[in-house]
Image 1 (cartoon, rainbow, N blue to C red):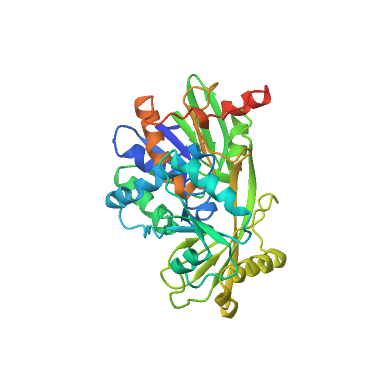
Image 2 (cartoon, one colour):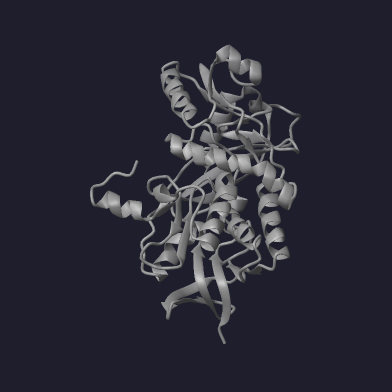
Length: 367
């Protein structure tokens, strides 16, 4: 016999678990989250977990990121300590010619309320003396920071379970059909669920999930490799574009982007390039021992921006897929809960609609 639920969410990463929690706050619906693996076994457990805002462009995208970052302190009061720290963010540049780009960025971000400072070399070194004296300057904003992704996802799920959300792990979805106004979701290990509404939040597997419903979701899988140092004495305070230091002293370093499909291997070439980048930024890291490396596979929409909202030609089917899921999860969870429970959102999701790709293919440009 099919198991009936009001809402089925496919994917239990930072985006899917946030949506589940925010939906569950109303206690109006029976909700299940289905995942092919286990929480944090995918992208959400393979990240530096920045809460990064200041150089997200265009400015409307930065604005969304800012709104989400502002929700983190309130979120912690509701679900518990996710080790969110608003450290401030520094994005160094080495070429004086990049200063003009930085000034234009600061001007555009100011239009939506994001304060970005463009610092000269001395100002940067005053904030972070450990940075290389070879840098020309940096952009800086106090709004940037980071979070513990393991605690974040764990506490989203724990809070959702308290509100009676059911979770089904190690249970791949192998088919989805819409019949008589409901979605029949066939799983490998637990039979079939029937749901009134469905949310696809499967990260790197979202394209495959969309194919069950006959829709093409224009996303790509992009590998990022991260290095981890031995625990070091406190070395730097800020989140720096490319690296951060954790509470236990480890430094996480990574900036690579490789379109190699779902391949989570690390490679010596990228490890060496990443290590060089780290030493170029912070020369003292040349003396640090690396203890491990790992990689994660991000899902990135083809134009780089989130796809969030109802799928226009399939009533009651919704999509939530994006890069920067850690940064955006509080806001996306909030907006999706509004959309499913109230039929409208406090922030217009028009720019994030899947329809924008159809418009682009017809020659229209979505700004």
